[in-house]
Amino acid sequence: MGYDIRDFLVDFTSEEEIINNLRKKLCEYFNCQHSILVTNGTSAIEIVLKSLQLPRGAGVIVPDISFIATATSVANCGLLPVYCDIDTNHFGMSINSLKQIYNDQIKAVILVHFGGFVNRDIFEIKEFCKEKGIFLIEDCAQAFGCTIDNKRVGTIGDAGTFSFQSSKIVNSGEGGLIVTNSADLAGMCEAISNWGISFNRSKRNVNIPSSNYRMSSIQCYFIMKQMNIISEIMEERLSKYHKMSKDFQSHGINVVVPKEEKDIFEYPFFLPIESTNKINTIEPRMETPMRKSSIVKSILKTFYPDLFCKYKELNAKQRYISFNSDLVINKIDFINISNVNEDDISCVIKQYIG
Image (cartoon, rainbow, N blue to C red; front, side):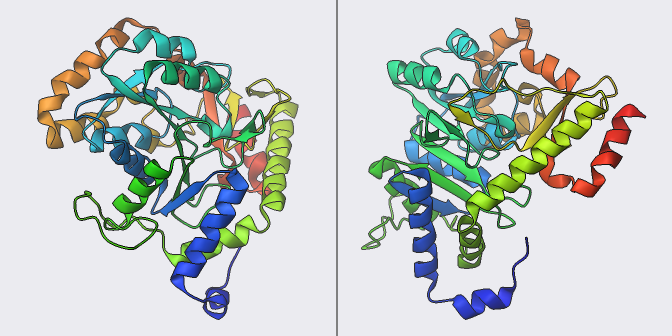
């Protein structure tokens, strides 16, 4: 899908109008009260974490499989990632593992809808977080448009974050989104991302630790163009996913996807395949499983050296656990659907069958 910069210049009214129109459009799409447009999906997570004003060194539970930004965002906020095992049925955080590793130092949970597959445990996880009085953030970077029980992912927890990076179904090269139904949380996210200026723009709060994380108007323009034909875009993704799945299986390659459920609609980001000829299509930046991440350790050692021992202590018991995430990473390749042109599917298949 291509756009001409001249169209943007012709249609341009005002920066504020373009941004506000997109925010309204996204609130309607997600059926939520507030949307905040930011620079990328990573900053979206960091902004939400900062807005929650958690105590320094608090634990934040994250799944062991995700893009590394889920964990580094936690560390960059002076908080400590605590790694939760996954459920092999949907590749997302396991409610049973969450209950096992929880302790009173945990103040938030980041649930990831990995690969565009909805976490089937999300309502149980939400109830558990409510019971413990901790925050639930949904990382939906790879799951734009997915729904469960007629609710779009990102709107079930306290806040949801999204990415508009170039490989995503809806993209603007880079970009991020925060959605929430909490006016207080939305106002704080807005202020942190815009030099202390909240929604009403009446004054700047200099006491809020803020910066410039705003999405540009030209990025908003490109996203709005896609939102106007969002049904067509999603159908195109599903069609490509089903074609790839059928082609791989016709060559004897097992496609490993969560069981379809009538109340769940998914638009996969990855095509997970089981292969003895594993090529490791997960890009190195993902550093999966995340509990082995050297980047998180580097962040803590460099910027929060006094918290590094606590980080190791919070994750100590995981040393003796047999992780499902290790089994998944060793057994399954996750092929980024956006990176494969339909004409190239046969070439990708040949890599697996020799």
